[in-house]
Image (cartoon, rainbow, N blue to C red; front, side):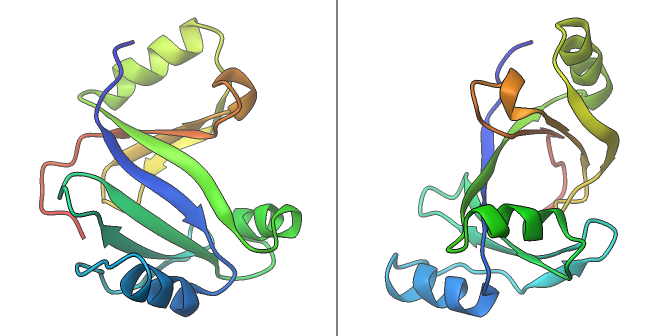
Length: 142
């Protein structure tokens, strides 16, 4: 497996609007996408572009108590880094390689917030970091 480009850092937040304000007013972000719901994953998402134009911050808020972000926020009430997302050219090949290496892939491959296939690898198998592996987006990002 060859490490791909860091696409985004996922940041869980208990208050999406307050986080958007923070990234705009404190961190100086000028390119902030419109928040949108992903009900199948139980999250509300907003992408913040970093000045380099290549990496984004993915703000994640729970859509309800059953959201995987809710459990994270119970342990980290202020929010914080949830995951790192790296691009790969072929999601199927990447999943096969991770599984062959004995890494625990969490759940099925599904469509992520950028509209490309993704899967997550357990943090205990990734030096303590929940890691999203995503197929490289070919269309304009949100």
